[in-house]
Length: 374
Image 1 (cartoon, rainbow, N blue to C red):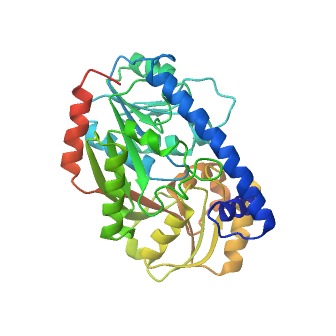
Image 2: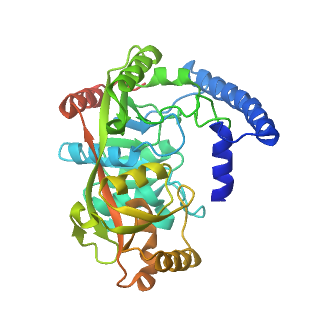
């Protein structure tokens, strides 16, 4: 599966040449035209109130993106929850990507300090957040409106909608869109010829933009992106920049944290199943470690016993000093604690460092106080 995905990615970005690659590119382009038209029609139906939007009884802040893959939505959701939890009873609602299908929704993942689900039931990202916060409500619900009803029943007075930009059905007080500053719009084409979930015109709905991983992009490129976003969404309330901040290295078995210096000059066997595997690779290297082998799985991959056995064999053969993965992947390995045992098995803990943080929070709080959801 990973080799097929890589093959298609190479076709999309143009690095794969030949007659077959050209034919596939043409087919994907035609399909993308059809997909883009469907997206425009759906958006128009909601904007013109032909398809009716539903409104929650409390303010809703949507956190989303316009491309597939990782843009840092989960770390930003964690940041926002941390900053606002003293003022609001917050519920985080997600559709639970990669979670088991046989779960009745809306499904309460956590309220207070008690977890009602595991990573398979909640989805990796939602479970990761739920494991780290006790004061919040976590709900898995593909139908976000139904999720808001459950959240309100549990006392929520603010809802953070994870990956909600394309969920037109629910009114929200603000649409925050995260963009990977390194690869903002792939090849500028809509799925499946590119990675855009919607045409560029959809960005006019966004109130706030956050350019993530800005530390890897030069000043001129950032200014180009800012100008493009101002053109696409002239009435937006701000374009902000964020950097990925490496916090610590955490032992999967004991949860003991080590400072980042722990990784310096270590030989690392790494693996991940995330939307931006290259970003994880750069994070490891920036911590001073040397990657001797890196195994990439598809985003939201559900690890099985056989996968872990293979990874452990590969780690042993690599003669690396330790195994390293992401926190998102690590939460799905709890069932394999006996297999992991006392092995040097760690995950990298990250957060976002946001420029002009106070200004951003002021804008978001004003949106929350605005009773007119859009």
